Amino acid sequence: MKLLRVGTAGAERPALLDGDGVTVRDLSALVTDIDGDLLADAAALARIGRAARTGELPVLDTAGLRIGPPLARIGKVVCIGLNYHDHAAETSAATPAEPVVFLKAPDTVTGPYDTVLVPRGSTRTDWEVELAVVVGRTARYLETQEEALAHVAGYAVAHDVSEREFQIERGGTWDKGKNCETFNPLGPWLVTADEVPDPQALSLRLWVNGELKQHGSTADQIFPVAEVVRYVSWFMTLYPGDVINTGTPAGVAMGQPDPKPYLRAGDVVELEVEGLGRQRQRLADA
Image (cartoon, rainbow, N blue to C red):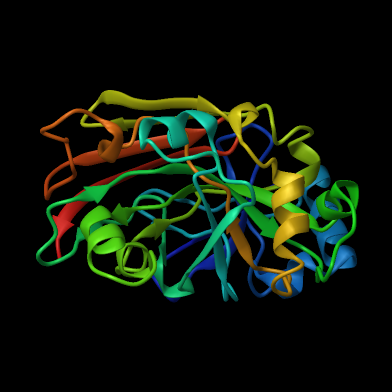
């Protein structure tokens, strides 16, 4: 299933993208929202699936209607840095021996078409297309990669927007460059895991002002999705509705020759992950 949330920020309603890939159907009569509680409720998900197959769900007129992030009440956003061989190479970083883990605050998450704000004083705002993993079952000390995948509810497109000066040159850890407002557009859909048989066979692409900047594949990940979920579960408990951004392929501004083409107000970024939908954001000054 492809689950989404539509409406103004803070007042989104749950919805489902029909099998035709165009029609959006209202889930409000079945569930109150798309969140961790729903993802952990197999019976509720089964009811949605049955209703989708019978065609009984009412159609939503989405003309002029905002698409919000496909997940409400996110507990935490866990991020994996330097997780593609080509991205590590372009930034002259050594291949990590273990996953590089950092956190983004849930309030950085916005809709896939919402405006992204360039922070005040920023000269190095950068783009990163990523595969996001959405947790569906509480995960603690998972032993195997097979067990890890069984705890995944689904997948989504994430844009891990980053400010490189704040991240690298302003002291401390990466958090300053990763947690600015609007720095994690998510969606448009939460695609359930049954529709993604192999998360290591997905292409990722990102364009800036119509120019292709990133074109990679999850096959190039240093630590595959299953290992990322297993590994993280040994350092923190993962709960239904938590999100893991699994890293970005080569092609970010930081890895390009000087003068590096960092983002500024007025730029338009478009990005997609195969089978998970497409985002589009216009940049504006904070």
